[in-house]
Image (tube, rainbow, N blue to C red; front, top):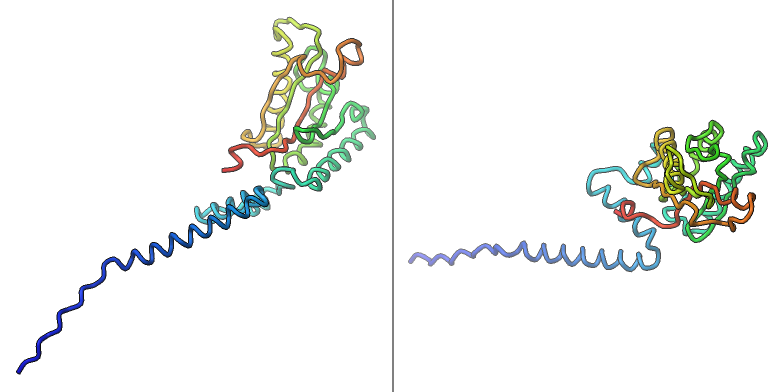
Length: 241
């Protein structure tokens, strides 16, 4: 008598769901871990996720890109005091050397405030009175500090400031135009001559409305007429991506 065939087992077409669910679980655990780390050090988290993003998209990491260009960042946000102090000391050293060769160094100072590291330049060091064309020695100064500010992977902002004496010329209708134009000239030079990324540098003019001294004497007015190059403490949205 012929034996009866056992019914063929049906292939389990839903086995892939098990593998898929395991993968989702692992990914969830991974992102929870990353989120936990980010609470302790958000900047390290952003740096790590940037590396991971470049790996999965086939690009190069931030570190390797910096090694190729020579612009290796001191610190992503300058929140580390040691990193900020290091940058400030390098700038002060460069400015001291300017003092040895040119009195220009005495018209430049480096300070830190809530905005970040501020390079403050009196306007006479960079511009003629009522003008916005960079002097030759202004360009030499920018050439000196550009390698340092270009190596820090933080946003840069150039601010133009004037005193309260009104200006009305064929070129500048008010101090607003003058302050913006001066800041823009510095930005343009840094971008065109030193290849600073336009994504991380901006220009703004405040006219006479952000003085550092009362506009009551000629000396104080000269202090208010200034350019400030600021290495910001914060990171822009573009840099977080």
